[in-house]
Image (cartoon, rainbow, N blue to C red; front, top):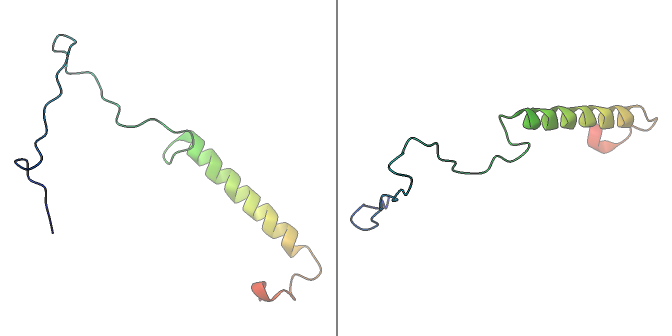
Length: 72
């Protein structure tokens, strides 16, 4: 297992120009709409479930559904 050491890959402390106010929250990545853990993500998963149930219901309501080998 190769591990990077600080002496090999030094990391510098970023300088601040706001007068020393280091209490500001840092945003590491953008909030993407529909990402897990958000209301948009829940809405997308619920709509995915509803469409899957609808598709399965349409397939099951046909007359040749039992004869299709993928579903037996």
